[in-house]
Length: 102
Figure 1 (cartoon, rainbow, N blue to C red):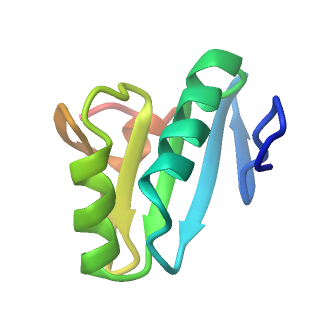
Figure 2: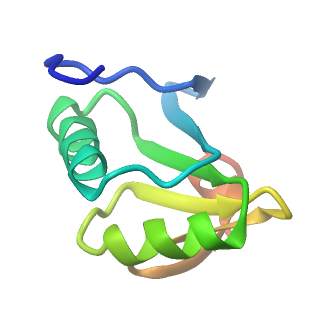
């Protein structure tokens, strides 16, 4: 993806005309790579939300600190997939997947 005008997620879920891009993070990368990728996701507007599934709490903490200001980017941990977080707080996973909001 680096240098490309487009961004391609690891996985895409489709439900009721909603698209959720999923990125699986095993390691923390350079901040610039995330900012570039997150900006592309927002500018493309192909996905309703982007979910980063973080393998460890360390990765989760690093990405959530970097992500302030990105409204449609969410994060969760492998150890607790039922809740997602962005700079605006916690939500149930089903809410961003097009399920029933709680």
